[in-house]
Length: 89
Image (cartoon, rainbow, N blue to C red):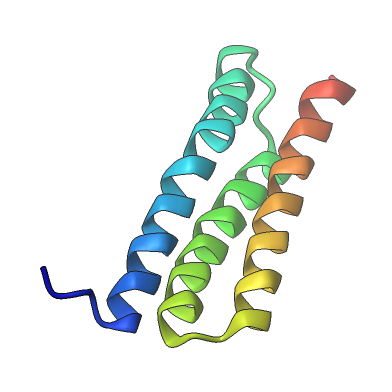
């Protein structure tokens, strides 16, 4: 078959990255919910994670490598914030 255009290949990679990172994020959110330790920090971190993942997708499709790295790292830090809230409780 015809190879995908480069932007479509990047979109596919961004999608795969998002699905791979959904499991740890969802696990953290579920644990905070079940343990009843949700608070402003966990809510803010979850919202931040969502928007950083949107940004990651957009900058990946646009082919902006440094933007992709920043968005990914920010999402990782948002997850660490949630993990901290779990461990500190």
